[in-house]
Length: 177
Figure 1 (cartoon, helix red, strand yellow):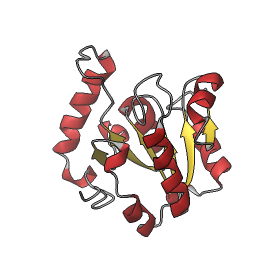
Figure 2 (cartoon, helix red, strand yellow):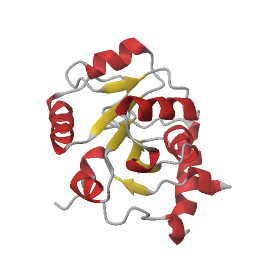
Figure 3 (cartoon, one colour):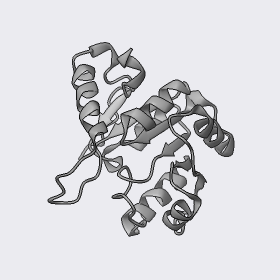
């Protein structure tokens, strides 16, 4: 039952992923959650994030933002990036994931979903038949309060760490320093 919630991989941040390796593995589409995955909740994009997406696009990746946020929030974040997006996605429903794949023109076995929440991002990707990468959620220094879902996620990740066949299903995708 819990395997529906297990990510293929777990890394510290979107910047800790070896995207060259993902390309070598045949992935061509990257679906990103926005809040607490790429930036802290509610923040705009910044020069580091803008450059990050520019590099991904130059590598040949198609990207799409998949967010439960409303259009104005996603458009504000996407202002400098100018990538595809699906807002009001109702994750973990598979409809948003299917729409993202359609927009990118990528088959699900060539796409990876990258997000910070197991219950929405990872569960939705798994139900859609896509590989998934969980990133540690972004917290501001000194931020102590986390939602109850995060405690459920800690339990799921504890079980994931003890189920070897579900870990590291993409191989070594961590960026070398």
